[in-house]
Length: 245
Image 1: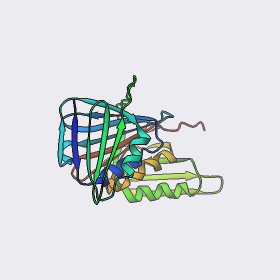
Image 2: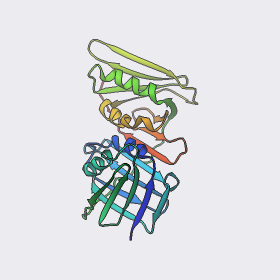
Image 3: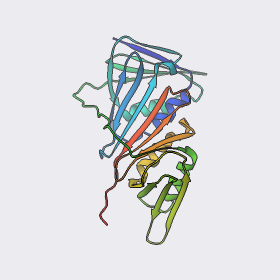
Image 4: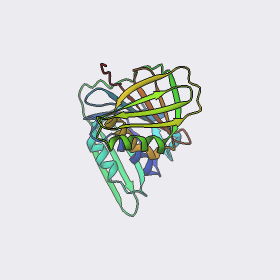
């Protein structure tokens, strides 16, 4: 059994894998005749990332069967990062190895041995968010950076029918950012989340100008990037921080 796919734009791969550095130890790539995808749970089990690259994204795509390819995540990320920014990428292999070739001014080949051991890939929970809004990626990212400047570990998101609000409180400063969202939201909700995990996900911000944000009252938040052609998807589900008053 084998598979092969070719992609002329390395930026999509590089942008997606930026978020995964240090996230966990292994990743199981799911390769079907329709897409390349994976679910990745962080070591603290509070965040789960998912990506999917559809067949239509690739210049050439062939998978003769369902493949579940388990590899060391850091090795995979290192190989992707070493590809040239203008390289044409060829992914191929079998259940025994994953081969990554970058073709540009020179040709570079990486062969990653697959791991053969029992592995239960994480499955995303089914969420029923009380509020879903689309925000400017740049605005959302700048808000997170402002909070990080105060060395705070958490951020509170609040939403009502008019505005999406980010709140950060320290002993000396309270920082509030508001964004008029224009979406249909019924009620008022707020939840607190880990700022580092959010910023790690935002390393992939160049995927899209828009980020979809879904959450509710003290519920997990889901962040999602979708490329303009809808052929590449990256999302993260992050558990809330529940704090006693």
